[in-house]
Image (cartoon, rainbow, N blue to C red; front, side, top):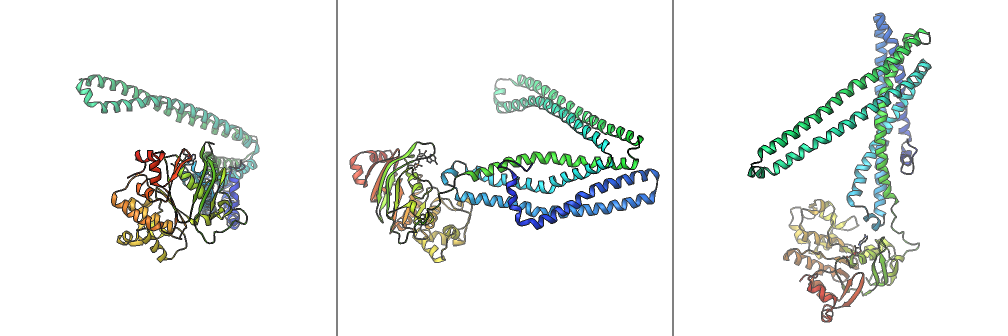
Length: 577
Ligand code: ADP
């Protein structure tokens, strides 16, 4: 069961290495637990004939011993379950950790193919299921298997011929039961389908209540309804009759199997191959294998589901990782914030060129607006600058150095991204601005002041300690934007990559964001995906993108005069007044 392809559980065993000592004691307890089963079967063999003989003292002696064995067994089971639970939980925890850490390093483009809901499902539900399967395998499947081996071994030891007969009879009984059971279920399901008509008729009738009255169709409707419930009754009756048949038939098949074993056992006693004590032990042992078999079957089904979960989780591992920094990658020492893009071409996986021959030069401290219709390739330029994705052709430079030659983390520190849709994590406003970086409290407050967020934060009852709810639902859109600006400029980046919100907020919110932005832009190079007229008017340079190509570059006045693509965008109100 463990030896499976790469999606198998065997690869998880490496996580168990640090827990060998615990595992030893867990399995030691399991060995005691399992060993008690044949002892109990033997005691049953001792007990039953003594009950028949009316030997009360002996009966009490055997019962006392059995009680002690039970006590030992259950104690061992307790230790087995608790000791093994630790390592089992560790496996799923470590697996989750491993996959989550992988997600942090996977190439973003590759990850976007999976929806966030899907990834969440994999990391929660799938990982939980795997955890359960691992726990069950260690704490239930393994002891059941061992119990089966031990008890059946004892049965062979008692009488191998009878065991041989059992080995033939038991699967036969199981097959007959399952064939009959699945036939019954199939027929029952079929008749059950007719039942669904009733629900839809009721739905129709309730929806069309006034229409039925208006057309005086009550009688007609009632007759249709009566007919339907009659069919419903018949279908239900058929199902119930079949289910009623299932119990006696299955019971009969099982009873026949047991009776057959009793008959063979009687023949073995007569031929002298077995005594009555041994036979009693044998029957007790036989009863002891039924339970583990049923556990093993259910566990196997769960194991299969767990395997599918593991495969889904492992799929994330196959996604390509972000490119590693090249050997000797440089650190940006004195950042200026000059950006140059040279003959850049880019296409996503589908091969369609999203950017072609892009050439842009941006000086230190310049404000450049990217404008163009949705899908023109503006955000893709940001992603390329941030090294979320890599160009197929052409080069991008930061301060004259090709960005692939720089340390990526260092480059990203210099390029502060203010996304269109603000994402905040639950936690305090303070932590939200800090975002896991090294920063002193006054640096954080200073960033918030520049972003025009300090005053509103201080007006909240708990100030910087105000807890943001998931997705920041307890703040307004404008406030969140300002927190995002404060977060971006903490650490003093030399470049701001700004994606303006497409949808307009109310005038007051827009104005307060604008104040924050203007303050944040001071002394920085800014590239802004612009949707506001005020932004483009103030830009030193507007780059008009369409269909992945630059179709114009200039200032607002120059471009308006040209009456070209930019003029179109303005008149179609793609840039808000
Ligand atoms: P803009 O920001 O100008 O609206 P984008 O840069 O987001 O445009 O997208 C440019 C083109 O690339 C669009 O046609 C878009 O459908 C496509 N695109 C964007 N992201 C992906 C992606 N992850 N995979 C495939 N195609 C994408």
